[in-house]
Length: 130
Image (tube, rainbow, N blue to C red; front, side, top):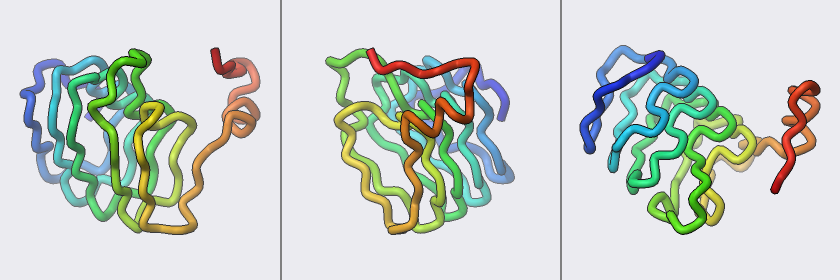
């Protein structure tokens, strides 16, 4: 999925997907999402600034979550307060989840990207924490 414009609040994404594209659901009004089996990657900012999102069901095939994938900047919003990442997840991009979100990774080797790493990967765009 590259960009989805009309999204119901409770969304079960269709079977056959392997990748959720960058900013695919940016600012959508979703509250619950179920990721189908076969999705291996969630691109950066895919579910960015969806403050109403309270539940996300990850697929067991998921390997990569891009930076800021579920992040939002409204510090008063804490709906996505906890997630459990399946054992298949190997990489989580910088600030993929909102501040204060409790993250449980079932794979002890899951790598969580640091600020230094994202700046090395994007030297022309050095991220600065406000």
